[in-house]
Image 1: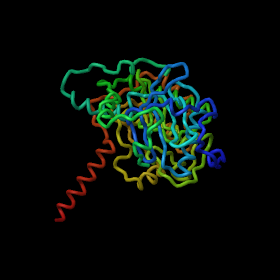
Image 2: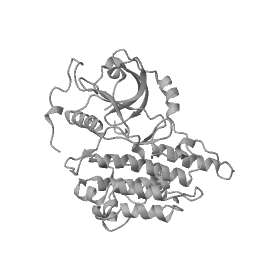
Image 3: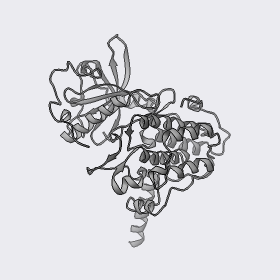
Image 4: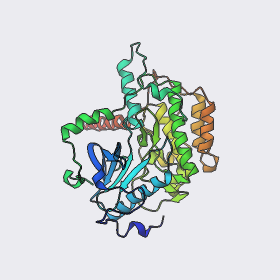
Length: 380
């Protein structure tokens, strides 16, 4: 994708007036708890003062001490979010501060965290309640039918202080972070699993209609709002239309289609491939894809026709949909519009929580660490 001169000149203006309707003054942003951090910034819960006197809670994704390339990428993400528009199953850009450092994207608040954490919490809670007769629902809202940001340079707190805003202390952050922990459903029944899949598919159908390729669709990038609605998030890798990747940077290998891995080609149909991996994550309560393979082994495995196995007790219909989405030829994969239709008419997607789930990446890492430790002891 060619670089736009809009992102390389006069990025930081001292005057905060002007800009489009998304631009807001920093004096209206008040930072709260730190809720996420990564390679190039941090995410805080924040309060945004609206023109009419109302205050709304938002997630403030911030970038500072970054290279020109990282700033261009962040501004490109903000531009993409503007293009996405509104959909109930896609995270929404509320406002932004891009006239001077630090750059800030103010996003819709999703207090229940990400879907991957929700799934793994349900897995852990299932283990705690095994052998008991506890089958109560916690997230009843998630069960009802609906129409149906992880790569963030180390920042100092002083760098992040906004005009008229203040940062919470570490203890306040720890206390306020508690309400971000998703409370999982103890009983992941067929309705819940199907509803999760359908909500994500509806959000992705919206992106497909807008000509947007997400390129990083995974359970970790699906956020859950206060009433349990799932929302597609993290547009840091998103591009418009068919995209050929030409720059060296980390990629979500285990969610990529073969054409993306081998030829760096992305389109909506490569998102369809990733969607099927996300379905597999849902059915396995956050299992780690290809857990028995190293990163180097995944590409030849896929090129040779290998695919993720059918999750234990997942319905044949659900796995058949995954297989269709994993067709080698992108043109043989369904569109998201077709996937929505399939999920709307299928009523028998289910999972048996008494089955043995594949390991998460943390469990895989621990297994490999123990293997190396035991091998060292044996040699000694």
